[in-house]
Length: 183
Image 1 (spheres, rainbow, N blue to C red):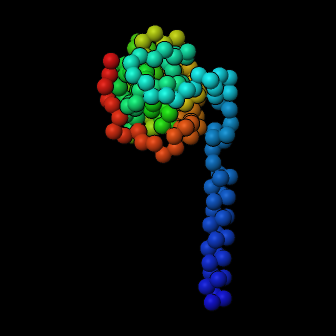
Image 2: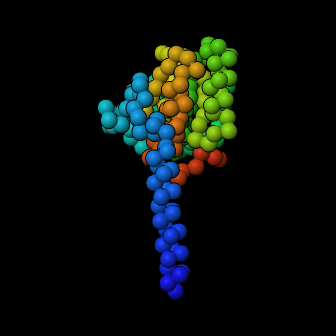
Image 3: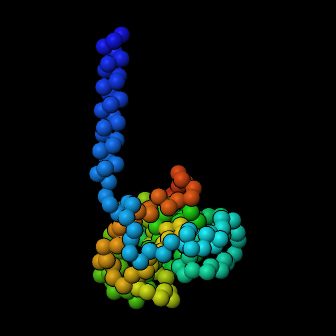
């Protein structure tokens, strides 16, 4: 009996040490601020409403970072859309924890390919062109946005690491079985 208790205690201590070490080894980007990110959760939380609505929605931020949205989310299992998607569907995906990468349709093909490589095969990500975008590239998570000039900017990886899944306000919600419709 004493041997069993000692063995269990050793396993528990080992588990605690491993857990503590994995937290200490976590990349700094998970807690560090990312230069240029706009935090609408802090600056304008009232715009982040969560009602399911039908039809078009007018958003105060473009591309939208949250707010009322369609009842059906946009599929966000590493989906790369080559045509614009519905904002209300994409916003629902953000609610689930996705990061939506948008880009101007005139972004050079090599930059589009660089962005697509960051999305393909990564659950809780999606990407689409966004006509009228005021910067070449914009990343959105629920309540957060980062606009950039170049697909090689290292802040893209930091944003994905920090906000993908973690920005969800519906933890555990799926990104599969959503719509794949484009406009």
